[in-house]
Length: 80
Figure 1 (cartoon, rainbow, N blue to C red):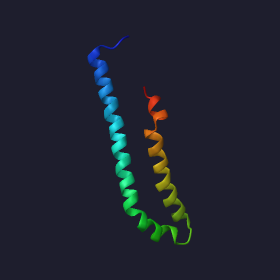
Figure 2: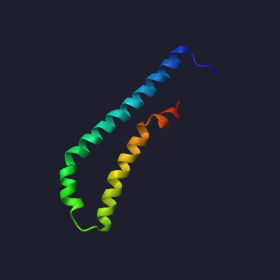
Figure 3: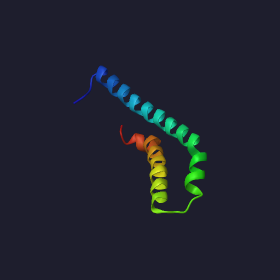
Figure 4: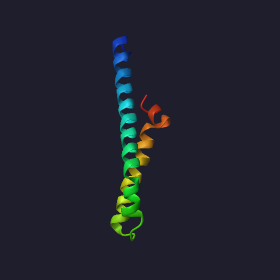
């Protein structure tokens, strides 16, 4: 089954919208991390390491890794 030109154009537009949404979310998350880094150092890194500290760090930095994985070119090629 082959796609017609309007269907191909619509598919590329949807793909671009998803890609640009991923980039904008990555930029927003990066901006938030930069703004809150001083607070994180003062409140998390300089305190006693508890389960809550580990949980916070895992949650925060696994999110960064997943965002990078999501917008990486190798991952994006898998969708095409």
